[in-house]
Amino acid sequence: MKERRSRILRHAADLGCNVVAAFEPENVFYLTGFWGEAIAVCTEGGTKLIAPKLEYSRAKQSSVDCEVIPTERGSELISSFAAQTKASRVCTDCSDYSAVEQIRKQNGNIVTDTEPFFQTRRIKDEGEIRVITHASHILDRLYEICTEEIKPGVSERELQAKLIYEAMKIGANPPSYKSTLNPLIIAGGPNGALPHAEVTDRKFRKKDMIVVDLTLRHAGYIADATRTFALGTPSQEAMHVYEIVKESQKAGLQAARPGATCGDVDAACRDLIDEQGFGKYFIHSTGHGIGLDVHEPPWLRTKNSEVLQTGMAVTVEPGIYLENKFGVRIEDSIIITGGRPKILNRFTKDLVVL
Image 1 (cartoon, rainbow, N blue to C red):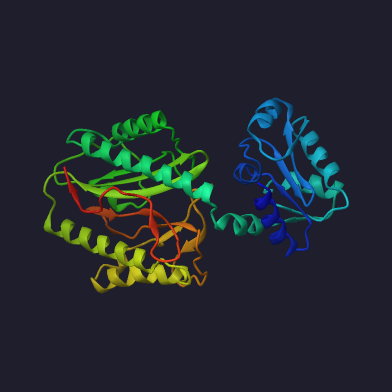
Image 2: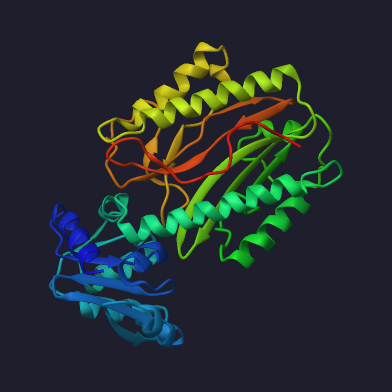
């Protein structure tokens, strides 16, 4: 935690700030080891965790290398924070307008900017890589379960329920998204042509291509992977599209090296799909960073000039989506290393016909 505190303070110093205050649970966890309602305040002298009394005992138990200060919720929490940071220039990730205004009234020297937090979190340490790797292996186990559970007559919703049940038994939890009603993407047949399809009661049928996108959290950290299955012998068109996506993803993985830009990886995937005549059906970016958020920097998208660095955790996930027919997406979580990336998912990328 001391190294994380030092790094985020260095990034905050670029904004003229000498104190960092984390309000978002992901950043509080990153800096203290506690996930919950609290404010983590980092200075050169150490880290203080200001927590409501109802969270105090839990914060004491799970936090690392910080002083825990109990207070009341709401305005008392903000006042306690302001008292701790007077005469300081504070960089914060707080997105609550009313809270920021209350802080400014008590301490006018505050800068709202999330970039120092994401800059610090971009490069994963060995402990983070171990957790993300384990989370990825949980996804591999769930794909094995898919091969046992996907059958004609089973619904998307039933498969989701089975996978979430098994994941939670293993020690993983579904993250929550504001933009969707379901924790997973399970899309059979024409539903697979929707990259962010909602899970429905549609039952799997022979000849379906079935997109299963699993995103789960283990010990705070995210792993993200997608596989596309065939139920019964697929059409020639579906097999052709599958092989194009598979080769596109392979090209993206080969391009994902230190010194390459995020746009280079996107282009490696996109150019191959373009050359095969399906460019207009690849309708999203190639990948994104993973860590404490499901989607975080760096972004593997067209013309993004950010350079990949050793220790970054990202996804590579090209896809082709044919409206009212089917979709195909193949995705792995990877770690950028000194040479070829470390591919965390081990489940086969050959087309599995069930």
